[in-house]
Image (cartoon, rainbow, N blue to C red; front, side, top):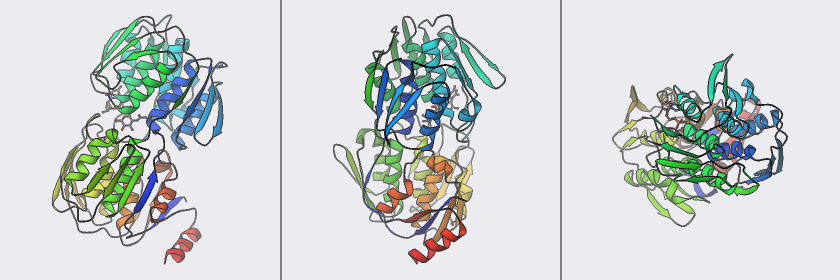
Length: 430
Ligand code: UD1
């Protein structure tokens, strides 16, 4: 039993330092194996998904040296196998970036079919379409995706759906292909740009990342680099919503405010004050939130990874809100959990109709996935009395020291391992 024990009711107030972006780090670390030189990557978040990816890299012979909690020295000159086993991929979907990285560098890769959070059907057809367009033969056998090429040749690839994963994976393979690749309808997320910048720092030639057309001119070899990952826009957004939900006053520090614009815009519509400076954003919520409409969209639209957090806020707002999830088809699983706290949300296919209630009551909840898990913790922080959130392994996939950062903002939350710990927590916070 590992769960968060929470006594809600305190507004969260203070400053919180945001770590490196998990989803950018997953792409950058996979890209780091594409050179035989040593690469140093800084601002890596110390979260489970990253540690699983690093273990997967070590399993094929990559030497990973953790200089400190957020910095790794990576040397991939001794790669001895090209098969990424199921045990890693089952835990994190993004191990599939090793497919693009290995295919680009060695023209051969075998990676188990991806897992990851169960937030709906998560296909991989566009990744495969891209690799095939570059000249690879791709087949699925015994649960493995096997990609193999004599040589990779640049191609014109149109993505039918905007996909972060496919854009990054194709960019990785194409960086070491012969000639020019054009990815049309590419994802524009900040982490796509970060992976492109990192590849360029290793000698790749990638232009247009951050727009919907990415142009890659293949190079023969990549070289050493030192690189720092961008701040995590979703971790930052989660703490911004923590201020809104608990009627608090939180400054998220070490962020790129531009990456947070869609969240900022919604918070202002909901009646929060938001102040931006160069690398910080302050959110103050001094009155009851107002209802609004939200539709998740690829960047720069409102991120699907912020949908549960904003829905929790809207569940407490004055009036009726509509939240439409247009990226994944199974991302409202937390609604049943939230109902235990007295929320009033009706889900019809990809839309949630949220009637705001005045307050939540405490409850024992289970995290259904990473972002929904974090959203439920925020809900508990505003509910009077004791709550628990179970299955926090999901939350730890993507948030470093989540409960410690919340504590520093005045939250009464602890990670407990047993019934005895839980009783101790209750005695401590009264
Ligand atoms: C990434 C993020 C995840 C985020 C998502 C959308 C990582 C590790 N994960 O996931 O946190 O929620 O972007 O911002 O960066 N699709 C296809 N075929 C494919 C690939 C995707 O149809 O081959 C569809 C998916 O089913 C989904 C949509 O495209 O409906 C977007 O998915 P995608 O952007 O690929 O998400 P991930 O890269 O898996």
